[in-house]
Image 1: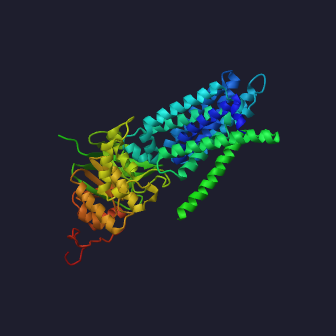
Image 2: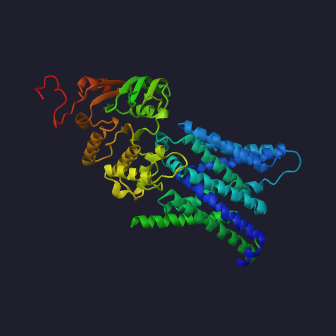
Length: 275
Length: 256
């Protein structure tokens, strides 16, 4: 199976996957410890509306996705700070409206019907060296933001009320965090798809939380878990196609591995807690 | 002339049309310790949150150290009644206490040795220094309560707000918290929401009774009428008689 490493395409995909693991490990730590999984799901599905608008108006769909993702982040973030109830329903609507707009825009678009499925489930065909560079830039932006704002983001994730009392600009930081999540989601959508990206943000970090006593450690563990699942999923996909002449895409395999890992981790944690 | 620590004038706050605070006025000077008494739902926590700038009043003005509440952030310590955070959150006791240092350290800077020393000193005051490296989720409710007090102290506040600080503590620890507040009152003004009437009678200098409206009293003398106005029903005054009896005897009761 290791001969796969000699294929330039496989190399690119593997490097992109490892770089994506860094973004998912760091941001996933906040998503999981602050309980923002459904918000992140809302962002990724809202981004699909931007893809459709891009096709309709003839600009790059990924730009539309980024715009819609960040806009949805703003709406949900401000609502989160102001609504006392009903946030759950609002997120569900943002989630569905993004998908609905995407479908309507594409239906209205003249000419050929683009391959929407590749946005929903992602495609490794889009992993070019340019894409690898884009994921690398995303990692740098996330790492710099988190290094500069670590103690504030920790306070906001742990206890917003006290963070505010201690003079932290809570609302602005939440919006920064949501914008970072939106950019990460949009970057990863192209390859893993709208539907699967949320699992990459949550499963590795949820495993890491079982074994971490600080946020920084959780980020490190989550990144390693994500990198491990990504690598294993890619090799598994390659192996299956070689052995059985079947084409099983690696994205879903990666997610199944991560969620299975979560189950094992939760069981091990329960055993440890009993002693 | 220095501004009072806290000046509240005619503050009203309604939640969904339901008045929670009505025409509340209150002034706190440096060195004051004030206890706020009141039944459940009387607006005690809301009043603290309005002082903290977490909620904006519908009417009236609030000045904390002569400034609007949002500009006093970082100078007012707060100990919430219930912890709102997730006990699985990966964080150590020391990191929680360090949150009190956020304002003094400022954005983009890391906590340094001075911050850590200050947070450890705050933990020592509440007898939690030995557990500084423990994950917060492994502590008992009473221990967490004390860590939250340490977090507020690490802020080195000029005004300390506590919401039922002894509610989840056993009697011995509760007493030590009241003794700590006595000690702290030399350095800062304190407002404490509590229903521990016995402790209040021994430890605070003035009492206010809140039930949407606020009744303030310059001394810690509680009368049955005051409590009745607050609780809306006759309240039995509990006076433990030590170290000295501060409540006047009930009518018809022979001396105190």
